[in-house]
Length: 174
Image 1 (cartoon, one colour):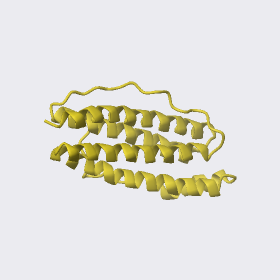
Image 2: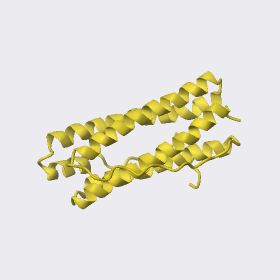
Image 3: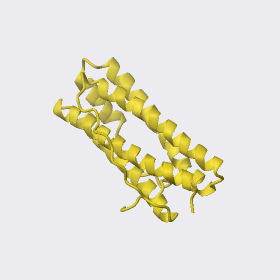
């Protein structure tokens, strides 16, 4: 069984992942309302990815006979001043999630919970990718904020759906 201190914090992280899911939905809806289908699709995809992360964590808890608690989450920010604001918010969110994931890994190490430490390795790699993606997107959207078509073209060209990661942990319900 995984260390209780780790599983308690992983349950908290499940809520953080669902909150990120909701925030990305709000970003997607913002771009959908602006008739920016490429950026909307990107954020709808990001929302699904955050939900998948939560479900991976649920499956890990189930696999280790640890209790699963699905916490409630606060409402996301849903009003944005321009096309840049949702991406700036998303970058800050990814940086915060990176700190949370690093904290989970730290707890697993402190508790000598080797299985949980190994489980978190995939999320460490994922967060490097997520922060880099949002950094790039923020740079492009900031530079092209007055040319929505240029933003849409860049997203269509550079942010296409990638292949599923065969190293990803299994997700509950998948």
